[in-house]
Length: 114
Image (cartoon, rainbow, N blue to C red):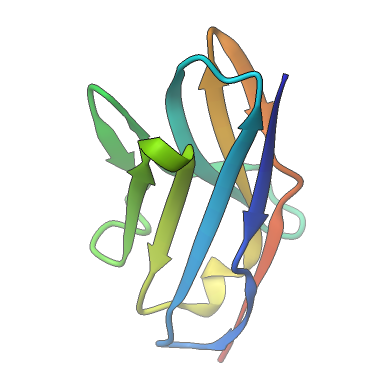
């Protein structure tokens, strides 16, 4: 089992920045994929950014504003969010794939005020 714990959410004004962190712990051999999804009120969960050994991908809505990075030694993934917009308001969930198993964090709330 792998546990994912997010941190770094909060309230920020439009145009501001936040940095989310997600630390993985547990029975980790090799985490192939780590990333971030988000779910706004009344909407489906959507991909924000995801990274693996082969590639890094972003949702079109966050390209140029968000940057995903990973510290493999710490089994931690980060999401630097700049130029935040009110439409970025959502619960952000960390996601990982370890030996073919999918894991989710409990989420951290990001609120962007206009």
